[in-house]
Image (cartoon, rainbow, N blue to C red; front, side, top):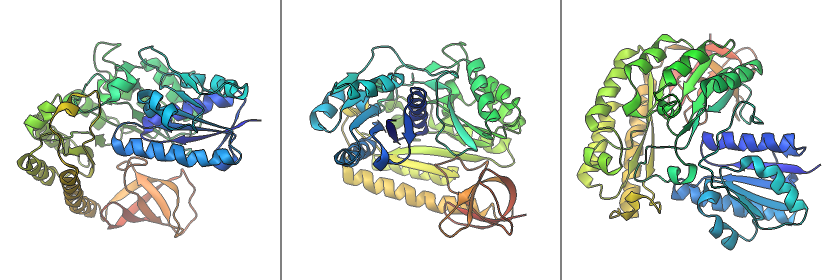
Length: 440
């Protein structure tokens, strides 16, 4: 039996795509292996969002190419990098045997069969607007047994001036509510307790097929499913977080009190150049509204430094805002010049300046994160046990930590705990990103 190994890079949306490709390969009769050294075919699902992600993708392709001198026969590249740079990949990376676009993932089994039949240098791309999976699409979940992602939409219509995602993924395309509910019910029946909704922009869910935003309705219907304990949604844009959504999050116990809101900047001139649909005043008002609506809530954000023409004064404005907002979590990245975007045509900031601004923002946030975490000392939380670390302590998350991107809770327990088990803990200590607690 042909063994197929997968390497999934980038975001959780890309991971869902990898799970679909694994499901398609398994349904076609291939064996899925987690070890590259055991694979006859290696598939790399790449990310191509910013320069660092592109470099990681290229480095991974070269790393996996080393296995072709051992057991591996074929190397296949798919994902965002292949969608953008198909000609360059085949020209510059002769180790690659086939490339697929982001809309052709279900064709992967046929590509593997064609490679074994002697065809080479295959390019599989389609001009269709986008690919949207359904609850009947084969999928092999790669996350731990207690949480799973559901991609509720594909593509994006926001057209931020720095972003290449619409060029890669196409226009925003929502899945139907009934289909999402069917998938969530099946996941709950299979034992998954936490459902994480993801999309390029979850807050615009439904606007294309229902002519109005339907995330609040979707959360309501998901909350009615038995056995689901936590429902989380990521990547919510500030201009679309309205009172209806806030009220739903507040009123539904299963929906975690956690907002992931990528703001990118706070200066109005920069926001306009970014083609963001919000303002400094709107962002500040939203943060105040969220904090006043909940007894305890976590707000995570993402900011960009070094955007073209960003002045030192405008960067200082961003720093001042971060000090004021005191985000519980903050991710930062340096602007990456992406061909085909409007921002790429603007005067660019030198790399040294971008690095200095990036490091300053992160250092600023470290102090804030520690301050926010210390406020949780003495509080009690229900957590899910994820496993053990190298020191044999238990690792856990509460509703206030999203999987994969946030810090952890290190848990002491006198009794044995199982992965996926929910227990109550009391927080004893706090660090910049992680917490320490004991089972109560």
